[in-house]
Every structure is written in structure tokens, then in C-alpha cells.
Length: 341
Image (tube, rainbow, N blue to C red):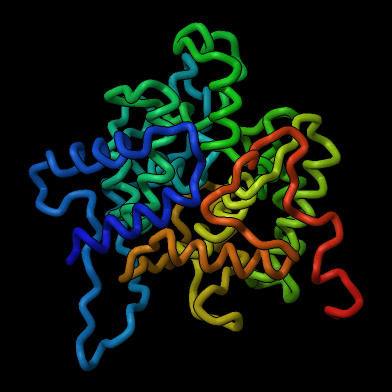
């Protein structure tokens, strides 16, 4: 039964994720690597088993052994010889800054990343595959990667070292990075690796109370980012794939950092968002999910956000989803129309 559930989750996730990757190979690789570990169940999320006194999964305080997992911040290319590597993903960078993976951000295996993502964020096994597999696939399935492999490779040194073509570089942008990201530029616009403080402050400004963010607040910021990227990026494409990629950056953050509050269990607290993005650290008083954050949950939040904006995600993706000029998101959102006010 557990195997059938995992297969269903993978099929659900893969049907709504980019083409151009051999997903049969990716799934086999994912299972082979993780099942080869001595730690029984390694890489698979522990199930939540309800009891009469504890029916629904909750979030529990996450203990950090500060003697081992102390906080030490590094940036991409920092260090005496530029030895530190970081990605455009604050959740992954936080794992390195806390030592759950190699602090240098170099020579990290698929299994090490999958285990750390599960241990700290309790990211669902299917979701972790959807993040990790494209990164490894784009670089020929190496035994280890550096964290900057998650970033688009517009630097000639990387193109030579890893023999990436410009077409592959675009795939990194549209498969691993995302157009209209919440706090990063599109690659065609500028630095798509480091936090853009103007975009970050814009994200926080969508809070209606200055303390929390709801899914609807995030959807409205997502719509602004869509319009900004469309105006600034001459290569802008925003099909169903791009929309999911952009929206998932919000919903995955809600999935792991969301707490019970005025917006229900999807309430994001501004202080947690600041720690996550500005410090690339695990927020103080972080509570880890008891039930993993699988892709169907993320997709449900994605659909809720896209509905608020005024468009619908098609799954599986239709032909021509990444054709030049493709854009499924309206410039004027549903929530901006008079009949919706």
C-alpha cells in the first residue's frame, strides 16, 4: 500500500512538472540512491499514525543541537579563495549554514541533500525529488554537486567546466530557477542568485496587518512579480510550467514555515519570513511538520492562489506550453476587477 501511495504521488507530481527530463530514470535513481543507505527508511518520510488522543498531524518544536548545528552564514563565492557555494534557494542554504549538509556547499550527494531536507523541513519524498532530480539531471547525474548547480549557468567558466550549452542553461532557469520568482530577478534581468532587497521588501508590504501573510497576500504579490517580469524580461515565457514553478516558491514556504494563526494553518509570520530570507536560517521557535509536505498539498495551494489571480493551471501541460510569448496569467487579476471587490 505504501508503495502504491508513493507511486501515485510521483505520477501526480511528474504530470505537472517540466518535460525534457527522463522522469523514469529520475524516479529509479531517486529510489536506488536512497534505498542503498544503511539507515532503514532513509529518504522516505516517516508516516503520521493517528491515535485517539492525537487525530490530526500538527507541528512540533524542532530541536537544534547548537554545539553541532550552530549558525554560520556564508554567501555564494565567499571565503578566502571563494570556496563557499550557495544556491538561490534559502531553504537549501539554511541547511548548509547550519551544517546539516557540507557547510562549504560543495561535494554534496543526492542522498545527503534528500536526508537533510527531510530531517529539517520534512519535505515530502516526491517534492524533494522534484527539486533535486532536475538539478542532477541538468548536470549529467554527477555523484556530487555544489549548491550553485541550482543556479543558472550564464558564466563562461561554468559553461566550459560542465560543457553546458546555452539551451541547457535556459533549462536550468525554467526548470530549477523560476521566472517571476518572489525575491530573485529573472536571469535575463540580472542577478538571479542573490536576494533582491527591493523585491523582498515588496513581498513583506503585501501583508495586510504587518505581522502575517496569507495565501491571498502571496497570490497578489505573485501577480505583481508576473507583471514586473513580463515588462522587464525580453525572453519572458509563462506557461503552466512557469506558473507552477513560480507559485511553488510561495507554497513550499507556507508548507514548511506556515503556522496556525489568523489565516488558519497556512499563516506565515513576517518575523519567520525575515529570518528565512535575510539570514538564510531556520526561524527561531521553528516547528517541524508531523506530516510531510507532499506535492498534492502544494498543488492545492497553487490552485487556490492562481484562482485568486484569475487563471487555472492545466495538468498535464498542453503542447506548446513553453512556446515563445506564451503567458497564461492575466495582466489584470481577478481580485482587481470591480465585480470581485
